[in-house]
Length: 458
Ligand SMILES: Nc1nc2c(ncn2[C@@H]2O[C@H](COP(=O)(O)OP(=O)(O)OP(=O)(O)O)[C@@H](O)[C@H]2O)c(=O)[nH]1
Ligand SMILES: [Mg+2]
Image (cartoon, rainbow, N blue to C red):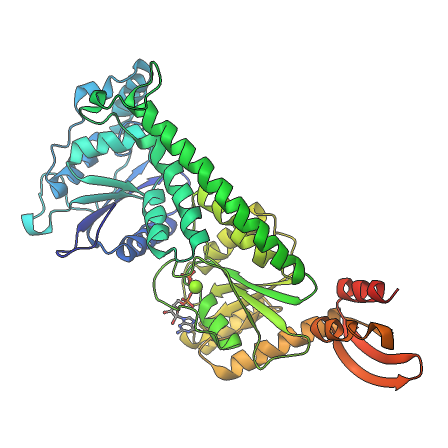
């Protein structure tokens, strides 16, 4: 586990601009990785970037760039030959890339080879903007003498730190174990740890088995939690529900606060929110409109994390309306929106109606605002910090549900007055009158809720 003790660990970022990725996209990816690394409490002291056809299977970087990286970390820049000869197939691939490297154009943005960083900025952590195979990570560790993390590892670590509720902690633990298991190595002296080991099972296999058991145990416990939640969700099924979704740091929690007056955490850091929070729109409407705040999305979000948070998201995604929050002041908002749409699709929420919200409009000039509205006429351009914008959004939500509601007249016999409370919970009462048959209520409700109320009376 990484720690943030003083002095601040120094990190060097590593990115490979593979074929098809533009300079702008590559720079944005590295900037985002920098923010992620910063969220973990590291100081980024250097960036090593290379253009290649594809990632080098041995160590991601080509030989020359690897030396450059090692100069910043104080490593040898060499992968011990034993590591290269791990398998003949890997060796062939490695050699092919060594040959290819001479032909590939290199970007000379980072310090030139041999220009060792002064010792005070020597990095002790190498963070690679790609998913590393366990052997790539090992090779990089050997060549740099530094701790090596990949993008997934960084995200998993941030999730681990920010998870608050029991459920989120369990979900993150599963994701971490899934991430760690293939990266386990035979511990030195591991052969002495015989206890509990099955016949012919190495200590590494034992460790992996323990991880599998722990994952199974966690999944079982989560299933119990989810069964409870399903019940609560069932009780809420007829309510008017809206979910805030979007890229991390877009301002979902800020809008949640502004719309509901709740004290959810707002922070200028990535993945501040991991738990779904549900609160009523304020001032309260009749029936209430429930708003949920959810975990943010990010590019290359590890699939296991998406899967593990799916259940938390499910709660939100049963909403009738998704508010798709975009940080319009971020130059990469288009890519962020694309990622958000992709993840929504992946978790089966692609077809839930949504309203696009361009947030942080206070940071935009008038021309940019106007251009946004022109290119996205159905979108709302707003600032979570502007009370008048939040009031207008509230009204828009009310209007949205009003338009989806149907109207009916319900006659509730005096013997069934208990139903009145449910009518108030799930519908808006337009008028009421009383006669000898009972109470007649003219109500507006969403079609599903109306059908259920009618059935209760039938
Ligand atoms: N200028 C400006 N800043 C905003 C606005 N909305 C949010 N922010 C800031 O953006 C940062 C992130 O806001 P959050 O509300 O925590 O974002 P989030 O989408 O919940 O982020 P995660 O929970 O990490 O996914 C905070 O520093 C907010 O103060 C806005 O309309 N204008
Ligand atoms: Mg948040």
